[in-house]
Length: 599
Image 1 (cartoon, helix red, strand yellow):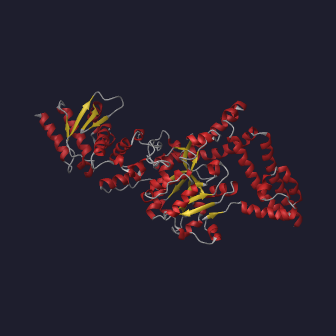
Image 2 (cartoon, one colour):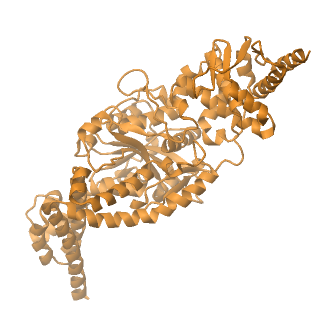
């Protein structure tokens, strides 16, 4: 009689929801276990969306087993679910009471296996849906049809088992979708996808942390934690750096710019003038060993991560140091699409740890994948390419570029930030001033800057006020060039060689790189902290206490390391760097002398 009542309770629990799945226990379960099973099934059934429950249109046998492999909580075979018996014991100990039910391993395991059955049903098929694969991290390949076999969205994962296959990704995430009230805050695009598939409307909790958090490297003077309100992003530009001299940059460099409006400004075209608030999204290889290796770049030996950079840093880096132009190509996106790109960028920033390849997974490929995965409309267009400049052409050809936003007048393009001229034009003008006064023999500014500092020094002593001011601009450029060459020299030195010469300096280099790695991989700051996906309030407080607190130390270490590693440079390189610094200092003195004489 007791068993019959318990069985009736179980069947009643399965029928409380409209078209709830019929879950039947295997024979041999005693009355106590049958009652506990009934309450577990009821807890699971009441959480299933109607579309999910209706898709499970056959009876499902539920068995409690003692023979599952170690670490395996459950299995779904055809229309049978096998669960580890220990989970039932845990449920009987109180998992079915109150809020504890949402944290119960038994409930999570049952929902996980029901998710597998739903995925296999005719109405399911989530793990085969191209849109879910885009969102989940099984990204399209750039060089051949199909998708990459590896999922590199490994950081800030709720359960690394989700990376095993698309099927497990679906099951793990549906667990959290049903059980975690904060899932829509942490993985909003997946939550919206599941809502749409199940035909339900769920609002994100009111206590989601506002804005999108990005971590920036304070060694370049940026604020360590940057919050971006997607509603204040007026536009998204494809930002293309001109061709560089190195193998990895000879076809340009692909980036995206978020045109963020200044506080208090109504979003509109004038936000383009708020350059100090714009954020650049740039995929780069994090070089953790001070050595650039073409072989490692070809074989994926470097991590590829999404860096969030202030626009002024990017402009300075490309136009003044590398002497490359920057072109901002505005994308014709709707309001929702702009916010979707910003949101996808934040998710990549916190979750993605890919592998850089000069050809197969370079900056153009990564930027294309960001746009492809963020916007289904763009995913349907023929944009795929491995060349940054080709991606710009394809965006234009496919009608994705808002050509009307760009003024025809080149001067207006510069004023509004659609084009950032390489400083070489300015340098040529400065060199013409100095050449006319001092009869300099170098062909142009580039040749002048390339001369050894000692060859340039006599002209500094003869320059009048106007020529000295022009030469100061050129000497500052020469100093930046020497600093870049010095860094390049170190990149070609294996860290082990440094260690053999000076173990103390090698240790400093290693520590500096560890901190740099953390700023290039934001999830590193939250290791050991509960949470997944986009960081919420408590995790941001931890960021404030770690990343922000480490910022000044990062700047200090950068200055101290710069002084120490100079001794590691070859004598000729060190002499050139010292000479460039001496020339800049001497020109400063010369200008003061000349200004004093004129007063």
